[in-house]
Image (cartoon, rainbow, N blue to C red; front, side, top):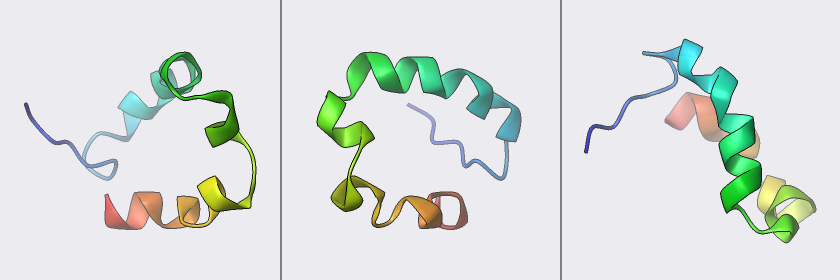
Length: 45
């Protein structure tokens, strides 16, 4: 497995919405708990 940071390959982000909706439970797509750290995603990963 290879870990690729967003900053290194930002063009890969465009296809993630479809994948996310297919594998994440519905409750992860809403609410304050799942979104608490979402803004830090691109800075840290």
